[in-house]
Image 1 (cartoon, one colour):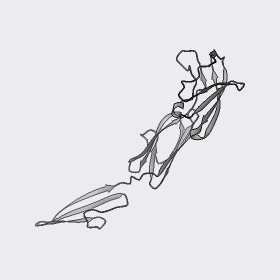
Image 2 (cartoon, one colour):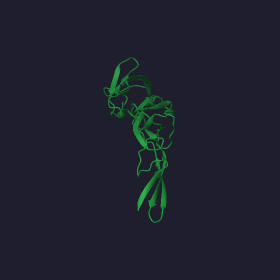
Image 3 (cartoon, one colour):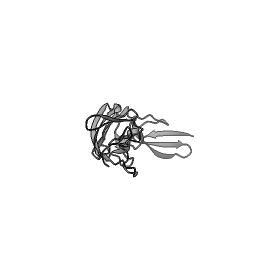
Image 4 (cartoon, helix red, strand yellow):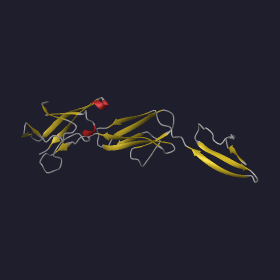
Length: 205
């Protein structure tokens, strides 16, 4: 009594090597007093890993930010920035500032990559009156980039304060003295993106 094997590829061994995704069917014949057989289908999926994943972030707006995900290597991939909706398009635009997680999956829905990202922005005004609302001005999500540098100036170009990414923000004072309602300017150095930003905001009292 012995077994014989037949694959839909024509091979007759008990196991085969494949290099393409698809359905592979094997029929096993039991050769003995009575000839019986059983057939099984095995699905092989393509779970190729990308050689590299690049994420381009265009932020610094309230809700017109974008994320472009580029993969290197063979294979077709799907993309998501919320883990729920996946698309073959690698471009996501009209995004609010905030935190997201980029997901890349293979066509067979096998997860191959994920990364947390942050789209930065800044408040257009703050009201440092100790009421618990908008009492400090800072770059939103600055703590996610440890090398971020923020310099705040008055309208005459005088440096008021330099903020580090983990600071709770500027409280509207200079040398312990409350500054008046006015517009103030800032410069943000963002080494991780090799970019610099300029802008202004309003201190309201």
